[in-house]
Length: 195
Image 1 (cartoon, rainbow, N blue to C red):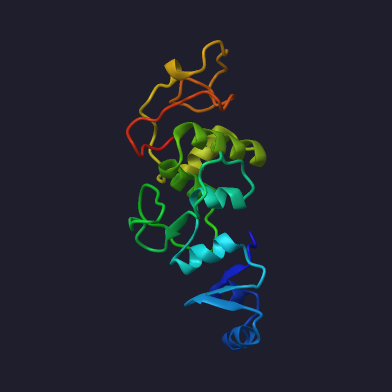
Image 2: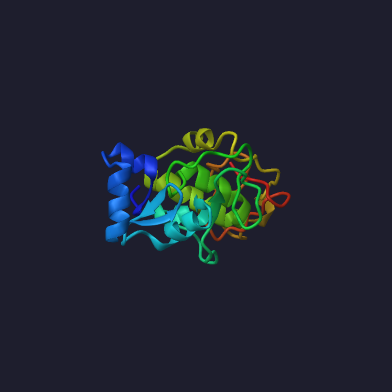
C-alpha cells in the first residue's frame, strides 16, 4: 500500500541510494520523518503523524486507509509502537511485538489492535467489512489473527435486538450473527479480543 511514507530499506530496494535520498531531502522531494523514514509531499497525513510519533499507522486508522468500513466515533490517529507495544498512547495487540516494515500495518495486525480500541459490535462490523471486501472466509481471518488476538468469552445471544431473526453466526463464539450491525453484542472482560 502506497501512502507516500517509506522506510529507507523500501527505497533502497527500488534502486535509490543513500546519496539520492539525501539529495531528494535537500531538494524537498522527500522529507525525513525520523531516522530511516521518509515521506513524499503528498503522503497520507495520518501515516506521517504515526511515523513521526515513533510508530506506524495501525488499528482503526489503518483499517480506514485499507478501505474498510469503520463505525464513527474513533477520530484519533491510532499508532502502534515500533518495538515495545505496551507504551501508553500506542495501540497494541496480544502477543509479542511485531516488526514494522511499512508505514501502515497489515490488515490482520490492524484488526488485532482494533480489538482493544473498538467496541465489540464495531469490531465485528469492521471484521465483516474485511471479509466482504477481501472475499475471505471466517476461517481465513481466524488464521490470520492467530496469536494476535484472544477468543471471546461472552455469549451475546440475549443482547440481539428483539424481533430480529437469527442467522447462523459466521463468528464462532458468538451466538448472534454480525449480519445486522445494530445488534448489540458485548465482549467479555475489557480488552478481550474477538475471533
